[in-house]
Structures are given as C-alpha cells and as structure tokens.
Amino acid sequence: MKKLIAANWKMNGQSAWASKPEQLFDLLGKIIPDRSQILICPPSVYLQQVAKNAHKYGMNAGAQNCHSENSGAFTGEISANMAADCEADYIICGHSERRAMFGDTDATVKAKADSVITSAMGAIICVGETLDQRESGEANSTIESQLRASTPEASTALNTVIAYEPIWAIGTGKTATLEDIAQMHAHIRAVYSDMFGEKSAQDLCIQYGGSVKPANAKDILSTDGVDGALVGGASLNMEDFAKIVQAA
Ligand code: PEP
Picture: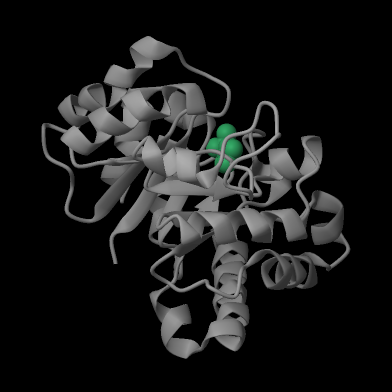
C-alpha cells in the first residue's frame, strides 16, 4: 500500500498557495515517489484551485471538514457534495480541533463521514486521546469508543482512512513513542476488523498525526501498521513537507 501523506493546512494560506502542488513537485525532482500518495487539504475557499493543480501533478486534494447534509440553511457550512464538485478526493472528518472547538461529536463525525462516502470520496476519520486519558490508562478504550461511534456502516478500506492523532501530540512538538504508535495502530486495526472483517482491516489505511516533522518522519512511517501521516505544522513549508514525502 502507498503511504498516504496528507497536508492539513488548517486556516492558513492564500490564493497564491494554489501553486504549492507545482512547487512540491519541483522539490521532489518532478517525480512523485512510488511509495507515496500525496494529499493536500487547504481551506475550503481554495479547494477548487488547489485540487486542479494537485491533480495536474498526480496529487490528491481534500477538504478539512464538511456538513452532513447536502444543502440547506446552514450558514457558513459546505457539504461533501460541494467539495466533490470542487474536485476533492477526501474530506477530513472529526479532527480534534473540530471536536474541541466546533462541537463535532462522534455522532456528527459519523454523519459527515457517511456523507463523504455517499459523495464518492474518501473519509479521513480522526481519533485521538487526551494526555489525561493516556496517563490514566484509558487510551485504548477512548480510541475504541470513538472508532465504533464515528465510523459509518458504509465504511470500507476503499472509502475510509483512520487518522490516529493523540491530541497531546498535535502542534506541540511531542510525538508518541514508536512503540505506542505501533500498539495503537494494531488496536485500531483489531477494532476495525471486529466491525468490518479481517480483510477490510488488513487493507485499511491508518495514518499517524501529531508533530510529524522531517526529523522523525522516517521512523514514524516505517513503524508497524503506519500507512501514512496527517501533517499539520510541517505541511505549511513545502521543503519540510517534501522531506516527509521522501521519508515514506
Ligand atoms: C494535525 O493538525 O492534524 C496535526 C497533526 O498537526 P501537527 O502536525 O502540527 O501536529
């Protein structure tokens, strides 16, 4: 399986950043490494421009969030359908910042992911524990309950990616140990296997996210069960992001 290396720009960028896929392609020596699939998730207002350019250079593009309904009186929101119409390939669902700051619950994440799948894109469903939960030995149970409640029945390994992002590692410079990452990815695969069968679980792409940088990317991406990375801060600098892609 190719490693899915995703850039989550969060609320950063401007229209000139639409040329970033070309810059990245140049930094990679005009070759997308065989083992990587690159995904760029800009703010929605730039999605269409970024998607057009990403596709030109053999990359994918995605939105960072969507509403679960197709249309309606939801001021300020965008639907999965609209993202698909802007040529998105994926949508991130339930990022911990959305869960913490914008009221996303497991139930709304599940509804959003369902709508992403219905719109024929890949849903990247984020799960992650807080530091308190980890320190009190509740990391496994927290992730299991998020996974069970946030993953729609229509999920398959073809339309779903799970991003394991320990909340305490996001934007903090702290990363989980390689042992903890391997253990949690195995746990996620086991829970997914229980929900959707062993074959689907084997084929499932599970990304790690949380302070992935050029310096730690190779170790993290070669850890057992890690099929990609969801990269925040380091994806804002194309030189750094290119190094992470190359580490894969
Ligand atoms: C993220 O926002 O998904 C993330 C992993 O951020 P960072 O890489 O900055 O920790």
